Each structure stands twice: as structure tokens, then as C-alpha cells.
Image 1: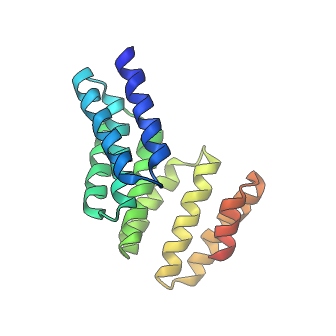
Image 2: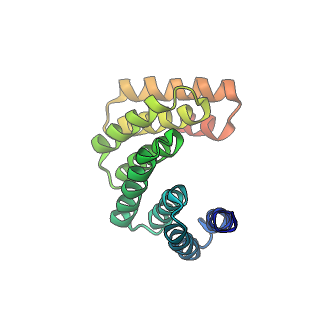
Length: 169
């Protein structure tokens, strides 16, 4: 369908601008959200809200980021999109961590970790985030365990980005 293809393209374009021009990314996601609502494309609504949350996070507007991730999460849950749910849970954890709410971050990160057991790449990221949250809480024995698990998994996957972060932690 033409509308759904256009929505997916808007989301991809928004993602490409996320780090260089987050305001532009936000505008593109808003356009995609409007088209999704008009076309009754529930998945499009969810991933455009998720994209808006990403942009608000980059812009430092954490309340709006959390609100959009929660709305996206609710939609992903209603359509049983496991990867969407997992991503939103992990991102909610990261936004709470950015606000130094590490205990709350851990709640979401552990939920995301449980959903990532069949996705080793995602699992290594969630383990890393859990290790970092424990490190920030100065619970170093737990931080070491999760960072070590993330490191070993990243080594097996040859994911140099995660390897470097785990070693830094």
C-alpha cells in the first residue's frame, strides 16, 4: 500500500537525521504519525511514536521522550510486536538512566533483557546497560557480572562497539 510505504520511508529518513538534525527527525516522525493515524496503520503509529521518543531523547526532553515511548509501548503490546516491546522497554531504561534514576532504569532493562534471550545482539546491549546502571549505583559486584556477560557475548558476536563499552565500564 502506498501510504504504508511512505510512512516507512519517513521513519527511515527520520532515523537518518536523528543524530545530526533531531528537530528534522521529529518533524518527519510527526508527518509519519499523522499519515499512520489517517491510514489506520497501527504499526506505523507505534514506530513513529518510537522515533519521536528517540528525537526527544536526543534533544534532552526526557518527559516527552518517556511519554512517547510509553505510548509506543502500549501500541506494540496491543499488536503483540515482541521486538517493538523489547526496544521500548530498553529505551525507557536508558532514558531513566540519563536522568540518574538507575533503579527505575534497571526495572525496564531487566524486562528488556528477558525479552532478548533469543536475540543475542540485543541481549548484549541490555546486559551492558544493566552493568552500567549497577556501576552508577556503586553496586560493583553486580556491575562486574553484567558487564562481563555483555563483554563475552559481544566477543562471540564480534561486536566491537559493545566490546569497547563493556571494557570501559
